Amino acid sequence: MSPAEFQDLWQQVSRQPVAPLDDPAFGSGGALDLEIIARARHLKSSLFDGAVQAIAPLYVSSICKERCTYCNYRAGSNDPSLRRTRLSLDELRREVEFLVESRPLRAVELVYASDPQLTPDDLCRHVELTSSILQKHGASTVGLSAEPMSVAGYRRLRGAGLTFSVVWMETYDQERYAACHPGTHVKTDFFYRLDSYERMLEAGLDGVGYGVLGGLGPWRRDWSMLILHQQWLRRRCGRGPDIVGIPRLKHAPGSAFQQIDAPPADSQFRALVALHNSLFPQVRPFVSTREDFDMCLQLASGGGCLFTFNCSTVPGGYTLPNRGAQFTTGDYDALLFAPRVRAAGHRVLWDWRPQPCYTDLV
Ligand code: SF4
Image (cartoon, rainbow, N blue to C red; front, top):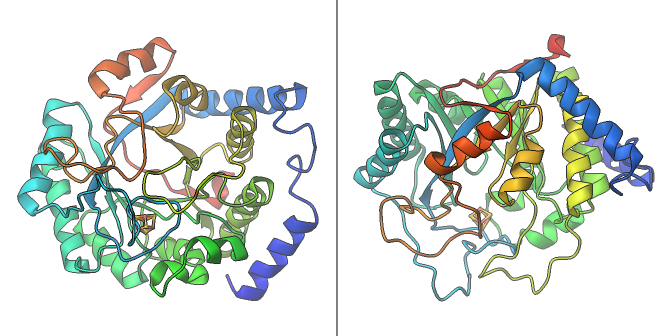
């Protein structure tokens, strides 16, 4: 997307957010929200019949060159308990085997800080190793959350076994983005990040994830931009992102923020996710353990989402005594919490593949 095309969309949502986000009643928990939530549940149920796709994040490195002001892993973090770590291949193997052999998980998302020592070859080795362990159990879903790459980089990772990749846009508000991402590294380049979705789609990954960090920017405009960006990518590429990240900003120990301005409140958050579900029911929210378990169940209403189990944001957090998390999460152990997900009326899919959302599906 060119800067001029982006500016057109941003000015459009700055004049007026996309309906019904422009309605003052949106997010109040009233009749408008209930109608959107009911419609989203109906659409999700008819497509997914309550099925949720289980996934676990696996942090590989907490060594970071970036300075995102809201993150404990930023260069310059002042968290005294933080012990930065990069997993060796043996440690990575242990972590994957824990999730796959002592838990029923069959989809793993490899998560990276922007570690200056890790090369594309390293990432390919990590993906190959994770994929090979999953394949022994008949599965193959390996995801990636890392700094944006070139088309060639994504193609190499796809060849190594990568099935999906997520890049969270954080906020579409360029001024706010610049203020929260100081420095001179990859993350400071707003348009390189914005264009990563086109690159991931061009590389032919089965799954592509987008999303904003709720509360970093103005949420009515950010979620309006998500909607317009999805529509723009579908027109331009014939396909849009099929995963939507829905993290809300939480205080992190070494964050530069003294306080967080205005993350969407619970009723606003539920309405935002339901609105996206009702507009793009094939796109699956990445239900995050930043939320309490009851909220996760509400967000999963009707199915058709990624549901996070066993979340540690510490590299080695499953099998090693490493300390210093990126941010606080719930840790919903698959053995303990999958029965509760089922009791809430969902089916838990352990072995699943990303499903591209082509334009002719909508
Ligand atoms: S959000 Fe990611 S890139 Fe930014 S400081 Fe944290 S780990 Fe590094």
